[in-house]
Image 1: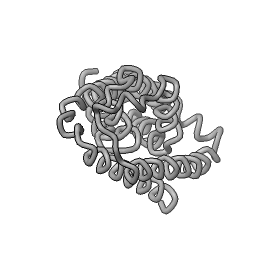
Image 2: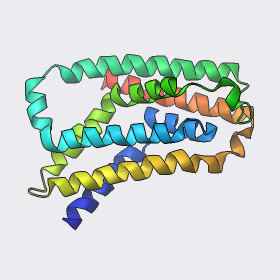
Image 3: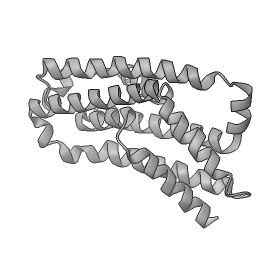
Image 4: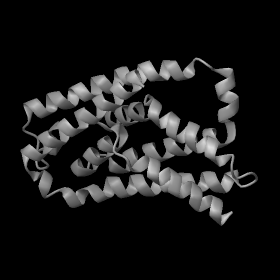
Length: 200
């Protein structure tokens, strides 16, 4: 059981670690200290649901809905392209600082809508959590629950660390230029993921 737990933990953590649309948004919210708890909980709970589906039901779902993957691919690419464009627009306009962050603060509903869209409309999330973790869990017969628990624990650990650890970077992001650079990086990440979905 312990081996399955740590295998699940290590796999999940390594998959989440790469910067992506979701991680970039969590980082931004952590820097702004805006609805951080709600954001990290939304990400971690979403991962927990998807990992559970992958470990316990992926094979059945893929047989019932063979057209689901292409639909997720095109819809996810369109969403990521649009969000990346907004990031480039923010970088062009500039003027954001941590001190001024409260002036343009978004409501909890707006923030949750964005983070849930970045999570549930991103096909990479399904490929990683449902597809990859689900398929690898089959190598632990009788210990799937321990594997899933390890993977879910890694998700909670990562998102809470990212969301609340981002404040250590606050001195850097007191300057507007740093926000513009971050927005450009986020835009490039979003567009590269969208291109990867369409070309791959």
